[in-house]
Image 1 (cartoon, rainbow, N blue to C red):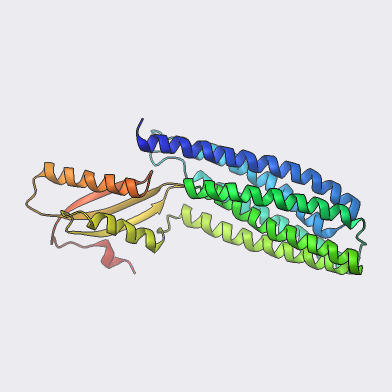
Image 2 (image 1 turned 90 degrees about the horizontal axis):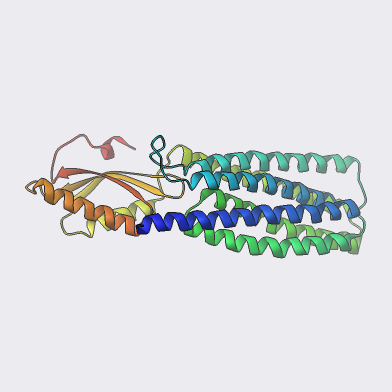
Length: 306
């Protein structure tokens, strides 16, 4: 088994563990928040409960997407199934946005029809447990996303990061309500939470659309590709570089300029070395290289794009 094959399998296993942990935590926190919302009547806790229900749905979608995207390339999908994670992220964004709108609506309703918040100590304990568990999950998810390049897990982690701010704000809210009897502060916090949810949904959807529409990779990645190629003494130049994210794995296409007097076998050997160096710099990357004689005059893509 090659290094890339082992890496692919390890990444797939790591992603599955992360998504299973996310689903499990979402279920546990949802049950705790149902209890807290019923006993306190807090809209802020209810907003967090709705968010946790969204987490269960989103994490379940992520679990399916990760399993699908981890499949190796097939005859009909020769680039692999990595972009399934982008579809998952879009579904998550839609559900998160819907949750945010629901909480915002309930917040507006309570402005006109206020409801008292009671037994805040129960809510504080539940939200504190939720905060600690969420932070632990985020640490593991960010490690997994960094190691695997998974957009779906990065999306899940981003949503849970918003949850941290949400949990802290709700704990502060419950303390304020307990000390000063300011029930209106509970409604205000819920409205802020809904705004965070809507903003998170927008950012998540934007990333997913960029991946699905083959947006170019960041400038630092393109720069690194050029550096890896031009470090080799036989490389005379590189042009018409195109990059994209296949969903956890990069793809590079470019023209490699070589000495025009090289025999075909030597040109092939040099090109293979370039591919190997790029795959070492970007594990799992797919590389397509077109060989050009140095100084050839042609209608280049670099001159057409703006």
